[in-house]
Amino acid sequence: MRGLEQIPWLYDLGLSVAERFGFIRWRRWLAEGATGRTLDLGTGTGRNLAWFAATGPVAAVDPSHHNLRAARSRAPGAVLVLARAEALPFRDGAFDTVVSGLVFCSVDDPAAGFAEVRRVLARGGSLRMIEHVRSTSTLGGWWQDLIQPAWTWVAGGCRNNRETERSVAEAGFEIEPATRKASGTMRRFVARAIPSPSEQLERVPAGPGRA
Image (cartoon, rainbow, N blue to C red; front, side, top):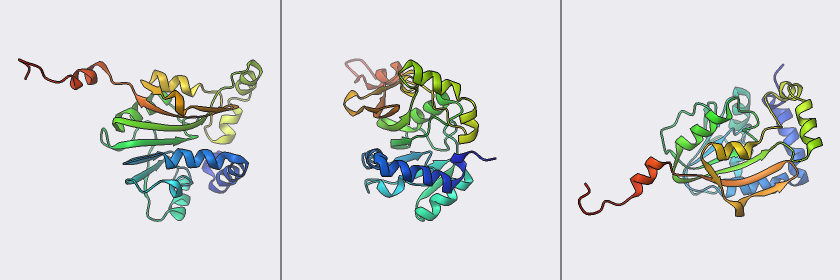
């Protein structure tokens, strides 16, 4: 049995219901704020593709053949790539924006996925995310833990009890507070990579006596 996330008509049905209850505003925020060369990570059936502003080329990645076929019918001219978040087939610094909408709950190795996002982002680039996360209430978190791994199996890989914001920070990103919005267990925000010590040294201008 494929999980719900790998059955395009069920995936689309669930998201259509969510969008009718307001999620469409979050989706528009996610895509319309992207600038420059953009990667739609975990594009699913391509529901973000219609919302990207024409500010640069867009590539869309998903690990499911079934989802990519559905995305092709929705956006015939899109650049679609079969790949996982943990192994992106792009050069370093290839993108100015990476968009991730309800993706990292299903990534098998989030640390490796975020490392790849950081690698393919150009210096100063942004990660725009929507994700559902572990509940901040004791009862809510207990319930999310209880339904694992059954929910993961039924949904096709989703782990709805992950502390994704913490994972973003641990991967060397800084969330911009003004962009962060929370609604229940849903989060949306923009994050940027914190320069590593070597990157900071590269930015130091050459002074007298420096080559």
